[in-house]
Structures are given as structure tokens and as C-alpha cells.
Amino acid sequence: MSNETQVRARWNPLRNLYAWVMRHAEGPHAWAILALLSFAESSFFPMPPDIMLIPMVLRNRHRAFILAGWCALWSVIGGVLGYEIGALLYNSVGHWLIQAYGMGGDIAAFRVAYHKYGYWIVLQGMTPIPYKIVAIASGFAGLGLPLFIGLSAITRTIRFTLVSALLYWFGEPMRILIEKYLEIVVVGFLVVVVFGYLLARHLFH
Image (cartoon, rainbow, N blue to C red; front, side, top):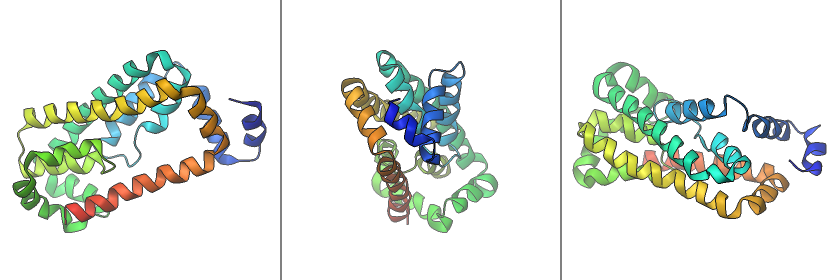
């Protein structure tokens, strides 16, 4: 982290958090934390694992694509949990999770959307649409589990590989850009997350 960022971090809580994440990106538990975030985001946690993937790649650019694969692996495993929640526990846990994310009764229309758009809905794993919504709804709609896993493996691998590839090729300029405009970057990141939920509400209504 640059000296300018270190000075600004003294009074800026957001930059303190950034500094903390960057320090722990090389810590002994970094890979476990990334796996946990990837798994949780695919089934119930609201924030994407990029908050840990990006600093880890910036710290270890030579491992960018290994980290992308690791992230995708645990994301798919978490997606299976989300799928099982939709298939077996929708009336309890699944419905509660959907309501907690503001989808309400929209998920009931997902079966209609599935019949209309087919398996292409799973390809939303590459878009800002929350993957957990797709996973839970796929189980609820009765998509075959092997097909769900296969499509998810493709989309999540592409999703995280693109992020890691950009950081691999443009890591240092992007690190400088992130540190210089951290507040704007975080706001933009949150806008993308919120947009994903709004897009899901629109598509699955």
C-alpha cells in the first residue's frame, strides 16, 4: 500500500478497512476466508467474494488464475447448497432467504420464467444478478442438479477468471487507481450489487 494511502487511512474508516484487507490478503487464513466468502455468497451471504479475491490477486498476481479457480470451485459448492435449499427447504429456509433479499413472492414466477427462457437463466452466474437467487430458484424450479453444476462451473469460472485476468494484466495500474479513488470504487461496487438485485426482481417477476 502506498504512503499516501497509509496517511489517509489514519482518519478514513474505509481506508482502514482496505488496509486491513490488504494486510490479510497474504495471511495464513486468506485462502480459507476466500473459500468461505465464495461458498456463502452462493447460498445466503449478500456480498460477492471479490472483496477478498481482488486484494489477494493484487498481492499475488502470479497466482491470479489459481485464485480464480479456487473462488469458482467454492462458489459452485455453495451454489449446490443454494440449490438444495430451493429444492428441499424452499417453504422454510428458501422462502425466508428470498424474502430477506426483497424478492418476496417474485420467486414463485421463476418457474414460469424457467419454462420461457430455459437453462439460459443459469448463465446469469456471469452477470451482476445474485448467484444465490439463481441457485435457490433452480432447485425450486426443478432443474437437474448435474446440469446446474455443469452450467454453474462454466459461468462462475468465466466470471472470476475475467476479474483475475484484468488484475493479472493491469494489476499495478489498477491497484494505484483503486487506492487513489477508493471511495468511488466502493460506491461503484455497491451500485453494481444493488443493480444485480433490481435486475433479478425485474427478470423473475
